[in-house]
Figure 1: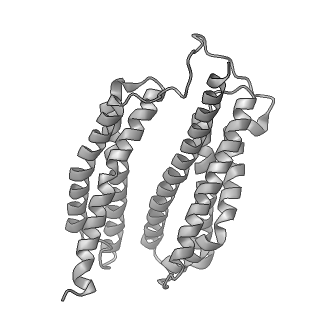
Figure 2: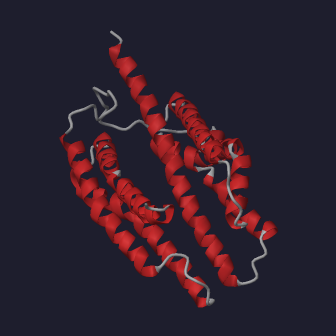
Length: 280
């Protein structure tokens, strides 16, 4: 009879392959976004970048972490050859899946321009100098405070459990707070996009991304605060290891929240244009 120790490698590699197969969704969404901006000429290059950019960043971070730990005579966090093997397995599965999703997106005939039936040939001038609070940095930082405050308690407990090697026993609560986080990000994104469109500014795409991803500033600030006041790191290499793990977490968090924010705003704008097109 197999024990849980025998099953763990199977679960790990099965999860890795399943996550890599989600590259099909990645490729499809990338092409749909390119269609939105009528920029599908370079869809193959964009699909390749989306397939390898973040995995390469994660692998490079892990290699640097192992390098700093080995330089102090400590055991490596992840075996180097096992990390390389997992990276190759990811690329072998993820790249074809991403290109397949991109190909399906190119062949699809769904709505690609948010219901817009007519566009002006001359872009409309946007002047928001009088409304300083409508600037992207201000809206990003303001929404970031709300997002960070919505999950600060659970985040503090999770972060403390990780760096003090304590058992984390609130997995169900963490999943609920993740769902709550996505709802808060989506609502703030829709609100900020509505305010942007009401002011006559049609450049809402990047602003909506930073509305959701802006909370990474507060997350990173909290991580630095925790390193200075709650951790006794005696060596410089320990600081580098902590900062690398923090950077990997912050980049992942920024991509998740920013993507959620853009998708929510896209659905909102889509519904607006469709409602307007249905009017006689």
